[in-house]
Length: 141
Image 1: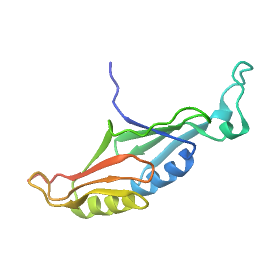
Image 2: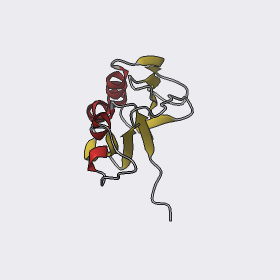
Image 3: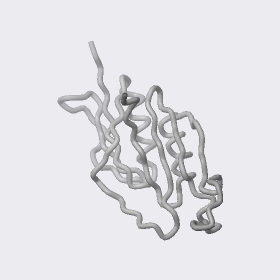
Image 4: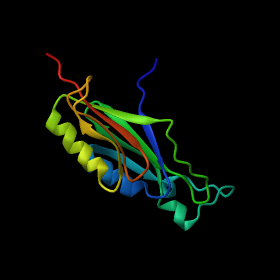
């Protein structure tokens, strides 16, 4: 049985900063953070001091959905990609504009938030961590 499908963001050593950013921007509840240092010691895979403080796994709750995040290990290849975007649906125009503005801080505007034929408030932003967000308001009559 599938329990759910959730977005998982990979960061490059700035996972703790990203968590605080998303907690604030998305008004998320932090359900926990585990660092690499919390893993059992493995003599075949020693961790550098730099690696120990990085995020192994973190989970945020945003209403009834989850956003997960982890850091790469030092020296591990890190690639940003446009293959995955995260869509957030709102039922309030004011709130969609507020979250759009928070995600835009230090990021890049892809499509200004505006009325479209499918939404009274839709926009796209790439945040300062390279993640693209689609912000969309749906008003049902």
